[in-house]
Image (cartoon, rainbow, N blue to C red):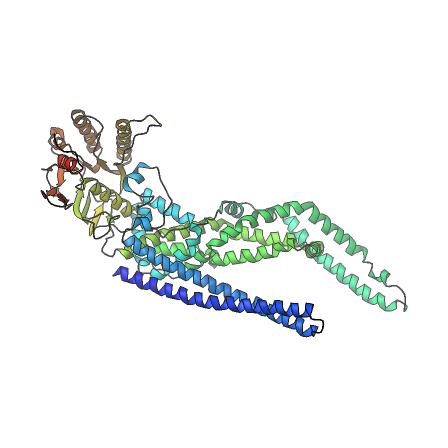
Length: 620
């Protein structure tokens, strides 16, 4: 079972974390001993006048060098321990997602005010996004959110399905990606300013004359210095014994002139140089957080076109993105010489060091800068595909849907709600369409009508995002989804419940008009339409809305308690009635059960009065 795999991996990583913790403790003890020995040697020399100073200082130096030597090794052990702990938690969270234990899972913290997202629980707690909870970078989150909200065309869906199928068995790869991006969940990097620098026009490279001037001047300066030193070596031999050598130390006028030019040039353009360095250095450290994750993907060999394209985007000019970042880090290290005080003064005076450092950084900006945004987008695509692949891996009985222009209906076999745990999920065969027909869902309270509508909507979203669906089989046309399920009034805006319903229905109707004009199919899901008015007016209004949607070629489902809607003459030829029912157990506990099985025809039972009695509202 899938759960067994995750439990074994969790236990293995927990064991590795404990092993590394023991090693880390030993390193801490050794470090403490070495530091204590270093301090003891110093105190011995300082407070014992008879101590051999050479031995004392030598011992202090030895223990200090040993202390510093083991620091990098200890840091690597601590990092490995932390990573093992994160991997153990990742496998624990996978088990929680399978059990749909939403309260124990991290909050995805990605709310949405879009009606469709609220109706289908796409974001927030106990949502589709939390089910796909392995995405941690800002680019990955925005990409996955866009996939859920914006249906992909059929050819792109096929490409994503192929990539998801290839990544599904790659559990190690997907978890290594997650553990490398997981730190961004707490400290999301803000790379906007770095991206602006990377995509900006270079300042120094746009002035070739200044580049060549700053190359020629150091050569002339070093040549003048060498000439001065050679003349000094020749002159010092002719100075009589006891005479001053100061005259021989005076530099030549050529060297003095060149140093003056260099210092003047560095002073005049210094503020511009420092502004360029500061602009880059302030933000590139946040971009470095992506290095580990970017290094993971180009090292793999993929077979599907979409994954190959992502890997190619992460290796422009044949060099992987993380190696480009290593080059940038090295060049920034050269520019850090400006913080070294007197050394920086001499480097500037003789070599114009800052100009050469800026040239190297702007060369990186020119060669790699235009690709940086593409790196982040490619990483986001890979994360989104990895999340869908995790869904496929954890639910091997789910199917990849067929989304094709030739389909005239949504037809599913054993369709269930993806957010319900497998042991509580009840699946039904569902068919919406063809156009000019609609599914009328009836049944008593709590029988499963709204859950059916959400099951259809959530699976349609997953299908058009390129992921698997909670069904044995699903085929559908590419659709635009419109829903009216959760309707709320607004006291602050002065919007009553009925007016809020009307606005939602108007949005569905307008979207149907646009889809019809553009030749696209609309899939609508309407739950208890216009419940905020009386029965007679509701029937008239529902008839008008449904007839309009039918004329526009939309397909969909409508749930209702109003059984008379099925008897409206104008809808008689289009309605496909189904219902859910309950089973009563007089005197039993519980007194009422539901099997959540969809059956043909209009509901034959109601339960509102019985439910009133169950909550204590007895008949008079």
